[in-house]
Image (cartoon, rainbow, N blue to C red; front, top):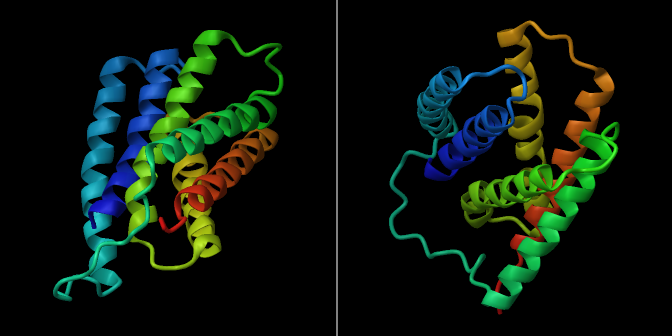
Length: 192
Protein backbone atom coordinates (compact mmCIF):
# COMPACT_ATOMS: atom_id res chain seq x y z
CA UNK A 1 0.00 0.00 0.00
CA UNK A 2 2.85 2.38 0.84
CA UNK A 3 4.58 1.71 -2.50
CA UNK A 4 1.41 2.54 -4.44
CA UNK A 5 0.83 5.69 -2.38
CA UNK A 6 4.41 6.92 -2.84
CA UNK A 7 4.28 6.38 -6.61
CA UNK A 8 0.82 7.91 -7.01
CA UNK A 9 1.37 10.96 -4.83
CA UNK A 10 4.96 11.56 -5.85
CA UNK A 11 4.63 11.26 -9.61
CA UNK A 12 1.08 12.46 -10.17
CA UNK A 13 0.82 15.23 -7.61
CA UNK A 14 4.13 16.33 -6.11
CA UNK A 15 6.36 16.38 -9.22
CA UNK A 16 3.82 17.78 -11.64
CA UNK A 17 2.38 20.46 -9.36
CA UNK A 18 5.78 21.55 -8.05
CA UNK A 19 7.14 21.78 -11.59
CA UNK A 20 4.13 23.82 -12.72
CA UNK A 21 4.44 26.19 -9.75
CA UNK A 22 8.20 26.69 -10.05
CA UNK A 23 8.18 27.43 -13.76
CA UNK A 24 4.87 29.24 -13.84
CA UNK A 25 3.77 26.69 -16.42
CA UNK A 26 0.03 26.63 -16.91
CA UNK A 27 -0.95 29.62 -14.77
CA UNK A 28 -1.02 27.75 -11.46
CA UNK A 29 -0.38 30.09 -8.55
CA UNK A 30 1.36 28.74 -5.41
CA UNK A 31 -1.85 28.66 -3.34
CA UNK A 32 -3.68 26.64 -5.98
CA UNK A 33 -0.63 24.39 -6.41
CA UNK A 34 -0.46 23.71 -2.67
CA UNK A 35 -4.17 22.89 -2.64
CA UNK A 36 -3.70 20.50 -5.58
CA UNK A 37 -0.76 18.79 -3.83
CA UNK A 38 -2.87 18.36 -0.66
CA UNK A 39 -5.70 17.00 -2.78
CA UNK A 40 -3.28 14.58 -4.45
CA UNK A 41 -2.08 13.43 -1.03
CA UNK A 42 -5.61 12.58 0.10
CA UNK A 43 -6.56 10.95 -3.20
CA UNK A 44 -3.31 8.96 -3.11
CA UNK A 45 -4.12 7.65 0.37
CA UNK A 46 -7.64 6.63 -0.61
CA UNK A 47 -6.58 5.20 -3.98
CA UNK A 48 -3.75 3.08 -2.57
CA UNK A 49 -5.95 1.74 0.24
CA UNK A 50 -8.81 0.96 -2.14
CA UNK A 51 -6.51 -0.70 -4.66
CA UNK A 52 -4.94 -2.96 -2.05
CA UNK A 53 -8.38 -3.93 -0.68
CA UNK A 54 -9.84 -4.59 -4.16
CA UNK A 55 -6.81 -6.68 -5.14
CA UNK A 56 -7.25 -8.77 -1.96
CA UNK A 57 -3.80 -7.95 -0.56
CA UNK A 58 -4.87 -6.76 2.91
CA UNK A 59 -4.55 -10.18 4.51
CA UNK A 60 -1.62 -10.85 6.77
CA UNK A 61 0.82 -13.12 4.96
CA UNK A 62 3.25 -13.43 7.85
CA UNK A 63 6.94 -12.74 7.49
CA UNK A 64 7.97 -11.97 3.93
CA UNK A 65 11.65 -12.06 3.03
CA UNK A 66 12.98 -8.73 1.81
CA UNK A 67 13.68 -8.47 -1.90
CA UNK A 68 17.36 -8.23 -2.86
CA UNK A 69 16.52 -5.59 -5.44
CA UNK A 70 18.06 -2.19 -4.90
CA UNK A 71 20.90 -3.64 -2.79
CA UNK A 72 23.48 -2.25 -5.19
CA UNK A 73 26.98 -0.86 -4.68
CA UNK A 74 27.22 2.95 -4.52
CA UNK A 75 29.07 3.15 -7.83
CA UNK A 76 26.32 1.26 -9.59
CA UNK A 77 23.69 3.56 -8.04
CA UNK A 78 25.50 6.66 -9.33
CA UNK A 79 26.00 5.13 -12.77
CA UNK A 80 22.35 4.13 -13.11
CA UNK A 81 21.05 7.45 -11.80
CA UNK A 82 23.36 9.28 -14.21
CA UNK A 83 22.14 7.14 -17.11
CA UNK A 84 18.54 7.89 -16.14
CA UNK A 85 19.18 11.66 -15.98
CA UNK A 86 20.88 11.72 -19.38
CA UNK A 87 18.10 9.58 -20.87
CA UNK A 88 15.38 11.87 -19.44
CA UNK A 89 17.08 15.02 -20.74
CA UNK A 90 17.31 13.41 -24.21
CA UNK A 91 13.70 12.20 -24.13
CA UNK A 92 12.43 15.51 -22.78
CA UNK A 93 14.40 17.54 -25.30
CA UNK A 94 13.31 15.43 -28.27
CA UNK A 95 9.73 14.57 -27.39
CA UNK A 96 8.36 17.05 -24.85
CA UNK A 97 9.77 20.36 -26.04
CA UNK A 98 11.15 19.92 -29.57
CA UNK A 99 10.14 23.48 -30.50
CA UNK A 100 12.44 25.04 -27.88
CA UNK A 101 15.64 26.23 -29.59
CA UNK A 102 17.98 25.24 -26.76
CA UNK A 103 17.32 23.93 -23.30
CA UNK A 104 18.34 26.63 -20.82
CA UNK A 105 20.43 25.56 -17.82
CA UNK A 106 17.54 26.32 -15.47
CA UNK A 107 15.29 23.92 -17.38
CA UNK A 108 18.04 21.30 -17.61
CA UNK A 109 18.51 21.50 -13.84
CA UNK A 110 14.77 21.19 -13.29
CA UNK A 111 14.63 18.18 -15.60
CA UNK A 112 17.53 16.47 -13.81
CA UNK A 113 15.71 16.98 -10.51
CA UNK A 114 12.50 15.70 -12.09
CA UNK A 115 14.30 12.62 -13.44
CA UNK A 116 15.75 11.83 -10.01
CA UNK A 117 12.43 12.36 -8.23
CA UNK A 118 10.59 10.08 -10.68
CA UNK A 119 13.07 7.29 -9.93
CA UNK A 120 12.90 7.90 -6.16
CA UNK A 121 9.09 7.74 -6.17
CA UNK A 122 9.09 4.56 -8.28
CA UNK A 123 11.74 2.68 -6.26
CA UNK A 124 9.23 1.25 -3.73
CA UNK A 125 7.19 -0.21 -6.60
CA UNK A 126 10.31 -1.67 -8.21
CA UNK A 127 11.35 -3.23 -4.90
CA UNK A 128 7.94 -4.76 -4.24
CA UNK A 129 7.44 -6.37 -7.68
CA UNK A 130 8.28 -10.06 -7.84
CA UNK A 131 8.59 -10.53 -11.62
CA UNK A 132 11.69 -10.53 -13.77
CA UNK A 133 13.45 -7.48 -15.17
CA UNK A 134 11.32 -7.20 -18.31
CA UNK A 135 8.04 -7.57 -16.43
CA UNK A 136 9.13 -4.99 -13.86
CA UNK A 137 10.24 -2.59 -16.58
CA UNK A 138 6.87 -2.90 -18.34
CA UNK A 139 4.89 -2.35 -15.13
CA UNK A 140 6.97 0.72 -14.21
CA UNK A 141 6.68 2.06 -17.78
CA UNK A 142 2.89 1.79 -17.78
CA UNK A 143 2.68 3.25 -14.26
CA UNK A 144 4.82 6.25 -15.22
CA UNK A 145 2.84 6.69 -18.45
CA UNK A 146 -0.43 6.79 -16.54
CA UNK A 147 0.70 8.89 -13.57
CA UNK A 148 3.34 11.11 -15.17
CA UNK A 149 1.91 11.80 -18.62
CA UNK A 150 -1.78 10.98 -18.97
CA UNK A 151 -3.24 11.86 -15.55
CA UNK A 152 -1.75 15.39 -15.50
CA UNK A 153 -3.00 16.03 -19.05
CA UNK A 154 -6.54 14.98 -18.13
CA UNK A 155 -6.59 16.93 -14.85
CA UNK A 156 -5.05 20.01 -16.47
CA UNK A 157 -7.57 19.86 -19.28
CA UNK A 158 -10.43 19.63 -16.79
CA UNK A 159 -9.01 22.30 -14.47
CA UNK A 160 -8.02 24.89 -17.07
CA UNK A 161 -10.33 23.88 -19.93
CA UNK A 162 -7.24 23.96 -22.10
CA UNK A 163 -6.96 22.46 -25.59
CA UNK A 164 -3.88 20.31 -25.80
CA UNK A 165 -2.04 19.32 -28.94
CA UNK A 166 -2.17 15.60 -29.68
CA UNK A 167 1.47 15.72 -30.79
CA UNK A 168 2.51 17.21 -27.44
CA UNK A 169 0.48 14.64 -25.49
CA UNK A 170 1.94 11.78 -27.53
CA UNK A 171 5.45 13.17 -27.00
CA UNK A 172 4.96 13.31 -23.24
CA UNK A 173 3.44 9.84 -23.23
CA UNK A 174 6.31 8.37 -25.23
CA UNK A 175 8.94 10.07 -23.05
CA UNK A 176 7.38 8.83 -19.81
CA UNK A 177 6.84 5.32 -21.19
CA UNK A 178 10.46 5.07 -22.35
CA UNK A 179 11.85 6.54 -19.14
CA UNK A 180 9.73 4.25 -16.98
CA UNK A 181 10.91 1.22 -18.94
CA UNK A 182 14.56 2.25 -18.61
CA UNK A 183 14.28 2.97 -14.88
CA UNK A 184 12.36 -0.23 -14.19
CA UNK A 185 14.86 -2.28 -16.16
CA UNK A 186 17.99 -0.73 -14.66
CA UNK A 187 16.90 -0.86 -11.04
CA UNK A 188 15.23 -4.28 -11.09
CA UNK A 189 18.49 -6.20 -11.31
CA UNK A 190 18.97 -8.56 -8.41
CA UNK A 191 22.18 -7.79 -6.56
CA UNK A 192 24.71 -10.58 -6.46
